[in-house]
Length: 566
View 1 (cartoon, rainbow, N blue to C red):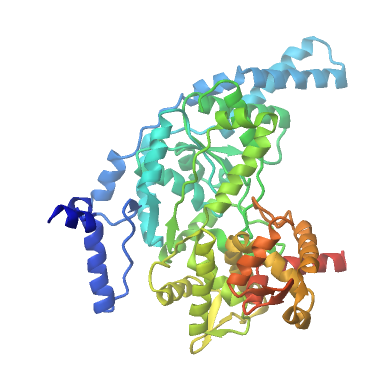
View 2 (tube, one colour):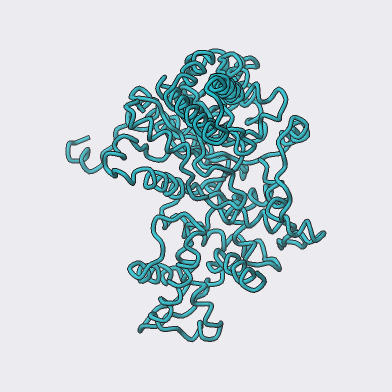
């Protein structure tokens, strides 16, 4: 080619990702010519961790030849460090002083009391601490690989993002803070780290698992340490032991994982941060260290007692391996240097760090097709045609992308295929009662309530994306249908929307709440999507106002019922 042609038509075959190109070419031929329903290949740099291996023994070979070695100090050594630490000694001394002041005991009994408290601290260590064992970890990784391959279509990660984590690990321990939707969360993080050759983390786990015979030994050998929330004999001593243990883990350059929400979200919403363990981590930095249960959620929301974890319940739940639970998408937020954050924000660093973490979690949400379909179905309780459902999901997914969020869960296929797949996953909560019509199950009262709550759970995972829009939409609808269609003055609408936003400000974790400075931009954005119409100082209801109202109406109705009956 002539030099001018090379400049006009720059093409270098060495820059083509040929494997990616050929995979898509073959996919296109089979999907569009042969009309086969296939999974679309991922992007270059994405990896499916549970891809089927070629040979029968490949999984076993993989499990016993991969994974970074985790070699923390021994349990006995950690116990001695914790018991002799300043924090634990100070807690014991304070308890002795309080006891002496209360009972006025003779000095001779003080030594006996101190020994008793030391034994209590040792029992806490015995019950709490993990005991990493690489052989057990490899067996666990092998088992999880088999289970995940059975129940999920893929576990999709960005290899580049985890390679960056592996590089950061050389600078000091990683503190991992994932969202908490199910018990799979902490299993999948350790599984990915094992696959990517990163040291698996120590995991802060709830005491619930201590009641599961055999299972808690496997979890403890895989890095879990167990924290009690109630029934603690000496709370101050317990907190001191926990703080010193976490400090020792970080000081020995081991990775740490905990859930800043404190507990699983049973509504699908991201919960406000809890600062307990985060405070221990930030204190360690200041000290100079380098640093599926959806079936139970509806009943817990209806007031039933939380189901306790047990070995028998785990055995009964083994039938989940017979079902397909779709795909897992792992997104890694930009890392935060704890030391740099503290230097930048000073005394208020802890609070700001906690909120910054949950803000980033919220902004990194991958929107699944099940959430989009659930949202649309809840706006049409009497059902809708399949064509209407597809159109509504396409419209809603367009809004999601315009707001800068990533779509997952099969939406890279033709939308109708993605919706069809989502309906299969939601088949227990959505009933196809007539041809091309979908309605919520109405077999019995308790079944109906369960279905509605589970669909709402999926919808709530994306409500924060549309929260400000929905608050403004509900404020407009509150003027009455006729007046909303005729038009409402912008100032009157703004006052009512801001009042509602202030009332509901604790409901969702949002970096930017509706305010007088942002309301105009929200109105303009909604007008561009035909949610409302704005002209000559008036705002009118648009074609899709009711769809957006659905994100906030249930919360408003809940407040109304509370005001009415409490």
